[in-house]
Image (cartoon, rainbow, N blue to C red; front, side):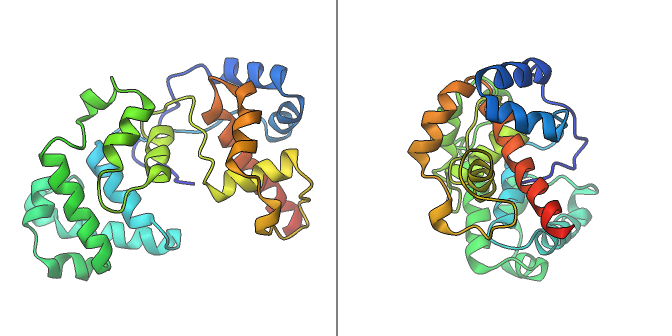
Length: 234
């Protein structure tokens, strides 16, 4: 699960109302909400869609600390040009391959970042002003045209950058494991196997109760994994 760090702020929707309605509609989810406590999720408030997706691509399939180091080196490599931590799509298109390799980016991720930059310039990746007026599914349809960006990546953008309230990332391992811990037979002391994790249709059926607060429910399912990990460590 991404952890916003660029001047994070609470989402603009009413989280207290969301938690109250979720607990009233789903007793088991209500028990989890009670155990976890207040909804403290924050969203990044300064990144453009381009910058947020650059970071998402870097973080794909590698450990968080390693990804953070690569992202930091990439930002620093543009300081001589930009004098700050923000660089534009054209900067990325114009930089040499050696600069991307020096930051620690693989060949495939370098290609994905350059495709992201090109599609930002041609308008496939909408501006922040435009993306705010688009539906969740329209955003997913546009952004998954970029090399290396799948539905999950866009869902993380919707939840943690745009603060959309009704996103259920059914392919996210943490959400699936949290679902199994909360509604299935998986115990905190068990090691989760693929057989323990719910299928998408099972999650969607239960999530009908959660509309229009699936993002809030997802956040609590991630927290269920944190609670289980602490129990294992104790």
